[in-house]
Image (cartoon, rainbow, N blue to C red; front, side, top):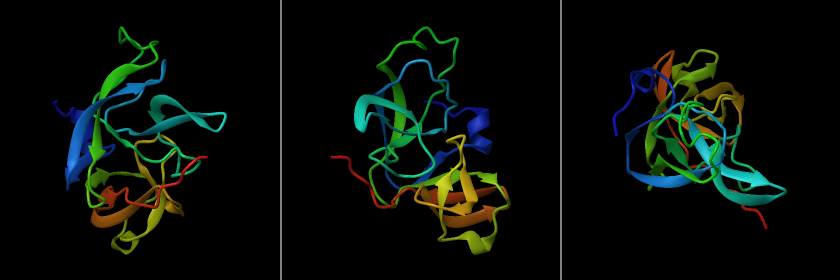
Length: 157
């Protein structure tokens, strides 16, 4: 699987640790760039069997699952198909790390070890908002860092 030019500079990108690429079913008619964080879709307090864009944090059973490795666009033949299989990088260790870009604000060395929300776009971190989305573990520059997604998982009944 090749990495697009877009994803080498922004969005989430596996960088260190153990990651496994697997094929998983996605919900219908939702476009997303490669490097988007994905999680189980929840409807009426239950999973639907499909993945969609990650919310701002791990909550209500919709925990971080992985990083989509291929874009889904409205011009795809299977765009409107529920259950279409797409490649996703799934962390196999709590120490798996990924590059990220900030959604808001400028990253600083003092942000390391902060736990923050996933950006509203599901492709970045909202470094100015504390939350249960990801933990910043390394500062690279004001526009790029490394994070882990090893925060406590939630469960639904």
